[in-house]
View 1 (cartoon, helix red, strand yellow):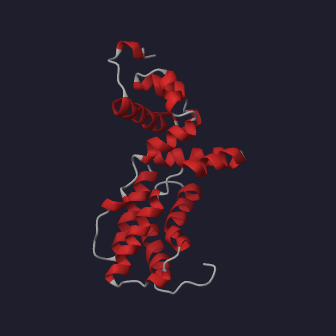
View 2: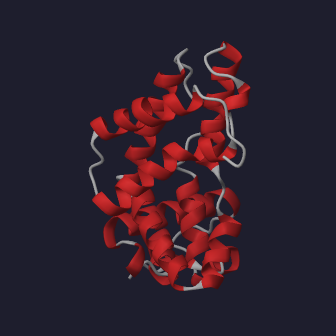
Length: 200
């Protein structure tokens, strides 16, 4: 066990970064089921109190650590094509699921489904980054005249991610690229070429 007292004292962003990295390393090494605040603190060279003070639960800690891996919605590559933008986003999301973020998602959903209070906690702390990324992709497509704003609804924006999560949770890794292409070509692109329907 590493004694955090033998390391230089860190504060603020430096300490947070060390704790987030330790969390990601623990997720990759032992998985969410065995993730503990004590192991994270030891790995980060921090005190348990400093971890608990910032994140009262491992759910909050895991969510924030994984959030740092998510793409910046305002800085996504613009390929000039709705289809290619959607494919790039889906492929990057699949890559994330293949690492610590995927392990966290599987564990977080297991926790949440077993306890309604944890479901509410997960909903409260979720950032919705993927939704914002897809919203930005759709906004660009509307501006380019590829799709109509009348075809854009919150549910449609979430369809691609929902299907990717379904593949991940029920079929495992790796997620075949052919499946990603099929989701985009058979569902996402055609869906946004149709006007929205009442209630959808």
